[in-house]
Image 1 (cartoon, rainbow, N blue to C red):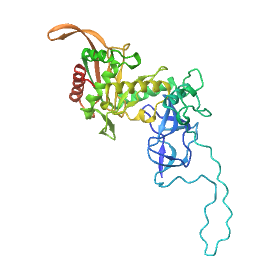
Image 2 (image 1 turned 135 degrees about the horizontal axis):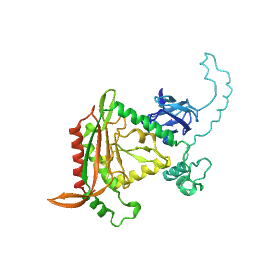
Image 3 (image 1 turned 45 degrees about the horizontal axis):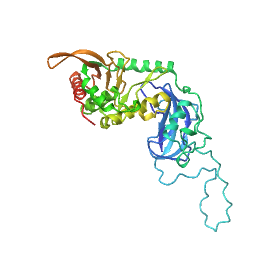
Image 4 (image 1 turned 120 degrees about the horizontal axis):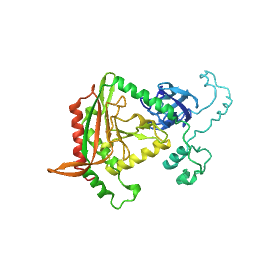
Length: 384
């Protein structure tokens, strides 16, 4: 029997409120299945199961506030056959030596409410979560009866009841205070000429509709992810007084929420994605982060964080490491500056790239090599 416990969805989380179970006792689940919805200061988060098995007990009732690490459910991971029928029948009597008398039929199984599982398109699920619309009772008109966008009733957008901007700000402050106290930060910065990369973006975006255009943030994240893959000592976690290198480059992309605060959900294997695929992943994460559709694994899988201040931000940022990660990268606002190219002073569009590293896991030399590699990839961008 395995125990399924409340996961930590970030260094700033101490507890969460169980909103809904998506499964019922006796139901078989597989690793990665969404089994519950939990509310934190960041909003409603879909929680995935970590193992295959059959759920035996749901320990926590919806509406309960549960600390990180507390028991939520018990999972029978050794169950090889189909889950047993849920009934209140008495256990079978031991075999008798004499010929058995007629046995009355067992009492009928107690009817259990069906699990609240619906066939729903991803777009409809995200829209329903953003609007706070229940899916119960809706009739789907999509393929195989799936609920699609057209089936959702019209309702004005409203903020998820789980989003608490004041609580989030307090939680972020506590986590960042802990980071500054416990992690010996070192900082490096480098101003990077983005003109070649921006010219490439202009060529790629020629003829594209606005929703399909590539943004400079995707270009910067693309270069950062590829460079991090070549510097494994900056990609991982400080745990139990030792560095543990990550198995992949799962970049946490910092997203500012409209009500205040931020989250940094992970884009898995970002170093292997094309520029277009990365742009799609970024747009999807931003939409779901602001609409209440993130998964728990997206908040825990990040191996390094990247933040970009965008067109209206400051020219540079000194970011704070998100524990247990050991590195965070920050891109400032793109500005035009006089720049020396081939002995001549010309106007160029540049940005300041900053790295904060954990001195327990790396040093300024390795951090400097990472910045230099990012700069090289931005100045000589390769075609996808």
